[in-house]
Length: 125
Image (cartoon, rainbow, N blue to C red):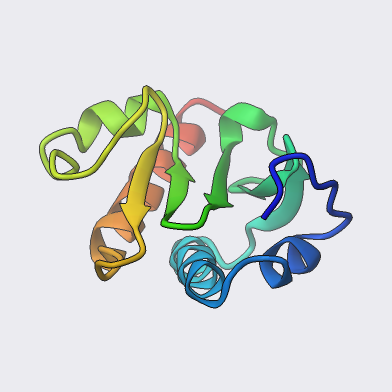
């Protein structure tokens, strides 16, 4: 995938990915929708984002991105802090975590992170 590609839809973004990346992104999307079936799919910073509440701002969204050897999950810095120990084996940024494609996605952990983020958002609205 080209870093500078401008996709018009999330489906177009997914379809432009190598097979393993696309599969992992769809699994991430399903984890988000398993927790919040009404999450709104949109595009932020040219990557897929899921608003956990209606008309959610960037702070109320979870973003995902695909690369050749990993996918990135952007739940929010507060969520990253809360799950710091559980994520210790993964490469992380302040508000993101990389899941390598050569290992199974930790779906239960991802769903727990989405639940936690959703609870924080709801308690602050």
